Image (tube, rainbow, N blue to C red):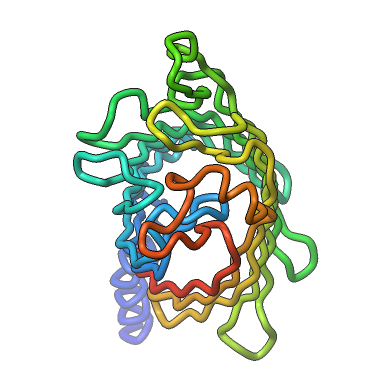
Length: 269
């Protein structure tokens, strides 16, 4: 009887621990990243004048699937709009599991605090992701409706007030390398937008239509990911030359859409 009482007592004492281990997740979670990258490439084109950029953001997600957050990076060269020389993206959307995959719909508001007028714009997006064998796959479409920030520009009064839309299609794939902490990754994207410069000398799709792609490796050490990748576009030298001096490196006139190996260090929380 004494041993039975001890056993019952131990079981009762263990109940809180078991309850704690099986406690449901909180209704709201916060995640984020901080990264240092050797070059900030947005859809294959450098936004930091092929120099280092410090980036970071956070996302608040509700158990219902709705989420909101922000992401920011410093800018230089082609991506500069004055002011703080900063890109700040506000993001909101809804994500839910469907079968073995996930669908994610939302909108990104691109802001450039203190910068030139007519630069901010909104871009809705939809993404679907899942697994195929050992690979994780994602396909996405982002469509920005007609807005002045995306419009064509020339030095004529008639050009002012124009607006254009912008379409971006992309696919991502990643797969773990067996017996290692490495993950191989690949990306391909297609842009279709205004075939020239926007009202402040830049554009989401600076040559109208072009492809961008990436091949790389990630190495995970706890919460830190070390990355290396080759990024490139099919924007030709003549197309880049046509858009100079806006579409160039301010240091030596080299195209900021040519192939380059990028490095990154990312910490997640």
